[in-house]
Length: 130
Image 1: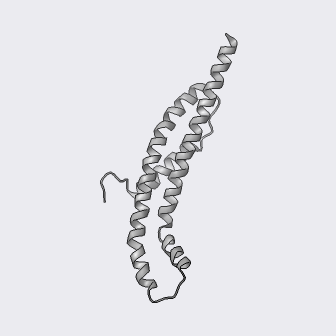
Image 2: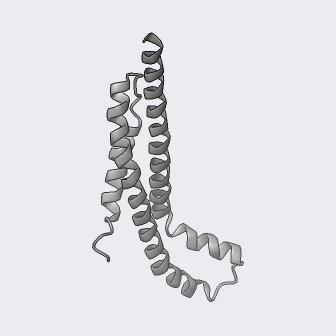
Image 3: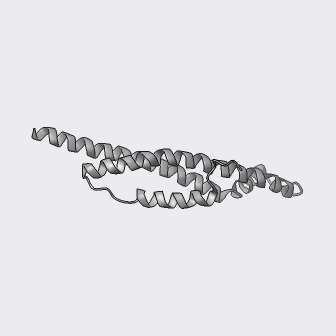
């Protein structure tokens, strides 16, 4: 395995940790928004890398298992659709990780936009008072 690919179990643990952060409701305090936004920017980069690593694990699993399944299916008369479904099912945990990393990346991006909105609102309110 490539040394720069994060192991599967470590990715799961990291997703759990990032997910806990993402599920915290932020107040409309602009200082909190700046602080949270700084963290979110790093999470956007990290979850992008995690997504690539998760796809690597999925592809590796698919490669390993597909040959085994094809050998088992040679004697059986399954349709192509059933064969494809069986092949996809061997990497369901890896696909789950891919989906989770993708959602965390999107969530971090959306939350960054919310932080920007909170900061802009505070700035507009400050300018209105001046």
